[in-house]
Every structure is written in structure tokens, then in C-alpha cells.
Amino acid sequence: MNTYSRLPVTFVKGDGVWLWDDRGERYLDALAGVAVCGLGHCHPRLTKAICEQAGRLIHTSNLYGIQKQGRLADRLIELSGMDNAFFCNSGAEANEAAIKLARLHGHNKGISLPTIVVMERSFHGRTMATLTASGNRKVQAGFEPLLSGFVRVPYNSMEAITQVAANNKDVVAVLVEPFQGEGGVNIPEVYYLRKLRDLCDQNGWFLMLDEIQSGIGRSGKWFAFQHSHIMPDVITLAKGLAGGVPIGACLARGVAAEVFKPGNHASTFGGNPLACAAAIETLNVITDANLLDHVTELGNFIRERLKKQLIDVAGVVQIRGQGLIIGIELSVPCVELVQKALEKKLLINVTSDKVVRLLPAFVMQQNEAEQVVDITCSLIREFFNN
Ligand SMILES: *Cc1c(COP(=O)(O)O)cnc(C)c1O
Image 1 (cartoon, rainbow, N blue to C red):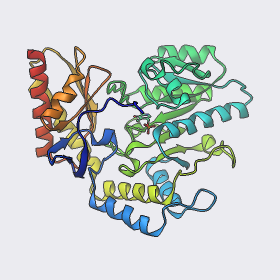
Image 2 (cartoon, rainbow, N blue to C red):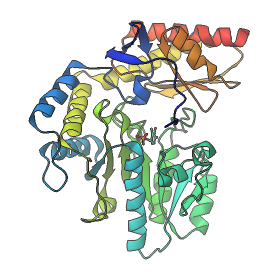
Image 3 (spheres, helix red, strand yellow):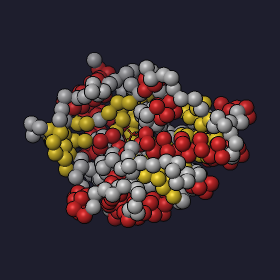
Image 4 (spheres, rainbow, N blue to C red):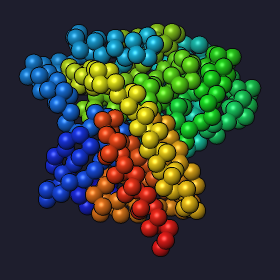
């Protein structure tokens, strides 16, 4: 169906941070499949793990035990400090699981119309519940009636949400991104998550973090919440978790981990052996290659170099980010930069109309990052000279 306005290029092969199109032209990839291919394209260890699993067992269903699903759950629990996991196949589905979990918890407490607090400029997916939760009219328009049971407040501010706590007895949870990706690479003040945690504790709400873009190493820690020294009740994951094989996960802790009972939620494909083998190996490679430290260092390097090269460009509003999510906010809409970069054989993205976004693979080397920055900065300079 006509759901995408695609760029005029088709890739047929990848290796690390490089992609080749169907005419043999090579491109430098600073987007990694939109924060999915953290290990770069076709990492040999990931390819091998997928091939081996495909030769042993691909799918059996959740009617039976799944060895690799248990192992992946154990690994995620160990890395996150959460208690258990539900597996699905995408980010939207992971958030659906979290939303259902919060609603069921509300009903268990005798709240018949449970409400979830969500944020302005957020993005949680394209299913009916997750587009309702998203703070973006573009993803909602034309799909009314939206779901009830959500209240929206500004991101990175405690004022409105504190008012909600005082006035709304039906709230059961807050669903929030530790930093907003699609919403424009918005990094909240350092104590924001801690303040939300305190408010949730005072009111008996679940703190549910959408780590679909921020999690699995993208921020320089396994999970972005680990920069804040708090523990959430629920985390949702997808994107980078299996390096490009579709997977989603909803992790829960404490009371939240006990909400679902058999029959409450399910997924045919969720957590099948193939996807779990890919996820386990993705986590292993990140660990073995010390990629979290590299993400932090390379992210700092890229931001510093961008700042140096763009310091005198008046149209650059701010350069921001955490680890390897990097945003360059410009003063005017700049979507055309994506096409201009493609002509220079560089893949970048523009989100929220005015924010150039870089989401490179964790395996990117410094000399490759230099090329990304230098091309991006020359395009931004040209853009403002016109
Ligand atoms: C990409 C994204 C989603 C949606 O994930 P899908 O796999 O496309 O359903 C949800 N939340 C955040 C923060 C995302 O970045």
C-alpha cells in the first residue's frame, strides 16, 4: 500500500556502517535502520547466530517451553534489574503490552476506567492504543475515534502532572520516553525521571518507560534510565534488541511483574527461537566488544566536532543528544537535507521537521564518524547560504 514516501534508492547489501545500492554505489549509514542495526549491517557473529538457529529450530509457538526465550529473559533481567519479560515483535506491541498491563492493574485495584498519563511530543507506535498515546497529531489524524483513558501533559515539566495527581483518581501509570527520539531528540533535565519516580511512588502509579529507541546501549548505558539511578516498574524494548530481526519486549518489576496471568496476553511469533537467538547474540557482542564505552566516547566526539564546525552558523539552534542519538535543531524546516545527504552518499534523518537526527551503529569508527560530521556540516552550511 501507499504508506511510505520512500527515498529513490534500494539497498541490496550491507557491511558494518556501509550499504550498497542496486547499482553498486556505496553509502555511509548514519541511521542504522532507524536505531535498529546497532552492530552495523551483517555483523559476522549475528549472521552466524541467526544461521545456526535457523538450521536448528525457527518456531514452535508459546504453547511450549522455548529455551532461548528463557535465556534472553534472564539476560535482560540481569542487565536491567527487572523481574520478568513478555516478548512480542515490535515496539508498538511492546507498548500495547504495557498499556494492557497498566489497565488490568487498575481494574484489579477497583478502578473501572484506568487512565495513563502520556507526554506531549511523544511517540509510542502506530497501533490504535499507541497512536492515541503518542503526542503527535500527524499520527492520529484521520483515525478517530481514538481510545479513551489517556491524559496528556508537557514533557520535562512537573507542573501539569502534579496537578493531574491532585485531581485524577483514575490514573494508574505514566508512560514516558527517557529521552524523546521521534519528537526531536529531546533530552530532559537530569532529575526529571527521579521526580517522576517520586510522584509515581506517592500516588501508587506505575512508571513505564518506553526504551524502544533509547534502550539496548543507544544512550551509552544498557538502558537510558540507568543514567538517573531510578528503577521503573515497566520497560518496553524493540528496535535494537535483536540487531534487525523483529522483536519487542515488555519487562516488569515488583507488583507490575505479577499482573498478567495465563490468558491475559499473548503473541504467536513473540519470543520465538530465531528472534531470541539474534537478541542474545546482539547483547553478547555489545558486551564482548565493550560497545557501551565506545558509544559514549563516539557520541561525545561527534557532538564536539559538530559544535566546532557549526558554531558560526546562525540557523543552528542547538546540538544535543546522549550517546549515539544526536540531534541538530535548525531554525527552519529542513527535511530536504535527507535527499541532499543521499546525493552525497550519506544516510541521515530529519525528525520533527527541524531536527537533523543521527543514529549511527555502535561499531562506527572515529574516521567514519568524521566523514558523517564533515558531510552533514557542509550540507547545513550550504542549506543556510541559499
Ligand atoms: C520506533 C518507536 C516505537 C514504535 O516501534 P515499532 O517497532 O515501529 O512499532 C515506539 N516507541 C519509540 C520510542 C520508538 O522510537
